[in-house]
Structure formats: C-alpha cells, structure tokens
Amino acid sequence: MSYRKALRIQDSGVSFPGLITACLLLVTLLAPAGARAANSFLDEIERQVESSIRQHYLARVPESRVNVTVNPINRTLSLTPCRQPLQIDLPFSSGERVTAKVSCSAPRPWSLFVTARVQQFVLLVTASRPISRHSRIDSSALTLREQDIQRLRGDYFTRLQDVAGQTARVPIRNGEVISPRHLEASLAVRRGDAVTLQVRKGGLLIRTRGIALEDGRLNQQIDVKNARSGRELRGIVTAPGVVTIP
Image (cartoon, rainbow, N blue to C red; front, side):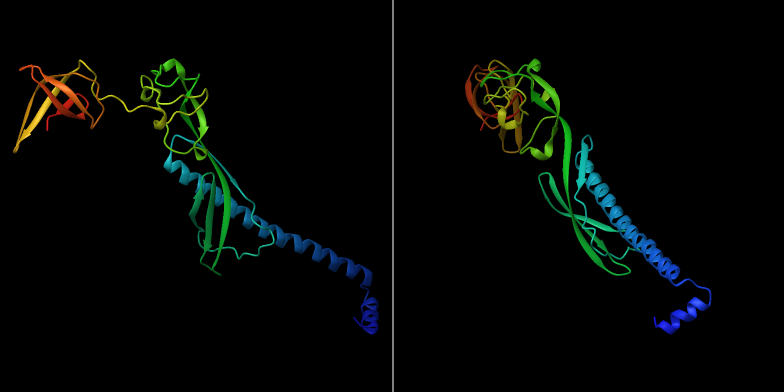
C-alpha cells in the first residue's frame, strides 16, 4: 500500500493499525477452520474403515469380540470430500495386521490405503492343567478362555465336549489352546463293539451283524468276526460302527 493511499484511508476515519489487526485476525480464524474441516473428513474416513473391518471379521466369526485400532491418516494429505459413499475394500491381511483401500469416485477421484491392527477374541477350549501324552483328557482338565484367534495358527475347539474323552497325542501345557494336532484320531470302532458288516456284490449291498476284534479308526483295517457264522474277516472301518468287507 502506498503512503498516499494510506493517508487517504487515515483521512477517511479508518485506523490503519486497526485494519492490519483485523486482517490478521480474519486470516487466523479462517485457516484453522479449513484445517478443522480437513481433519474432520479424515476422522470420518478412519471411522468408516474401523466399522468396515469390524463388520468383516464379525461376519466370519459372529460369536467373537473384535477390537480394531486404525493407524492415523497423515494429516498433511489434502483429499477432496467425496460426494458418493466411500468404497472400502480389504485387499491385504496378515494375522492381526490388515490394510484397507479407501476409494472415492466423485467429484475428484482418489484412493488411499489405511492400515489397522485387529484383535478377535473367542472363547476357546484350553488346558486348565498339564495333560500327559497318551492320557485320556478328562473334562476337569479343560476350560474355556478368551483368546485372540488372530495370533493362533491352525484350528481350535470352541466346545468342551469336542475334546473331553479324547486322547492326547502330545504333552499339553497348562493354559495351552487345544487344537486337533494335540489329539489322537478318534476311534470309530472299539474292540468288542457290535458292528455292522457290509459287503457289496454287484449292485447288491449285503449287511450282517459282527463283532470288532480290535480298535479301529476311519479308513483303518481291522479284524472282525461274523456274529452268525463265527468266521473271522478283515475289513475297513468306513463309518462309526460300520466295517466294509472288500
């Protein structure tokens, strides 16, 4: 501003220092408002990502409890607010780490990757005391404890009755989540059980009663005895209580 123009402003009754102060105040008020709007939009993106991830994991395991921690988006990013609902995809996940792709189509297309950490807690069958190898697992040695399944590898059990009565294939530590690899395959037939013997001749399936002469698991060959003739035979356990004679 020229000296002559400043004099004209002063002559008109307007305070020059006051005008400068007002302009500075206006700039101070407007700048944070824009920043607040941008941060509010980024906050909304984070909320939608958190919700999408939570719904995704709950759909996989409805009875679980899911915690999602979204890593903050860089506040220096300048993204045009989206006129359409945000599109959120989950293309990458590894254990408890997940990446969400957020896309906007209008008015100005953009996409953004947001990372998060997921914990998914489920009540799992856990050893309440040490269990010895080859021992029969009693229900008193089991309990249900909440575990983060994103940290686990392999399968697990959620019902005590699926483990009680089974035999431990390996030693199991106190507090260890029990998985199928800890257990011996269940017996489908026990020695002395009454079983159904079946043999196929052409298109005809013949069944008769028999007695198992040894324990057997599915697809395992065992000796059986025909209850009617007393003849001993060799067959394959094809179902619980069923032995098929080749």
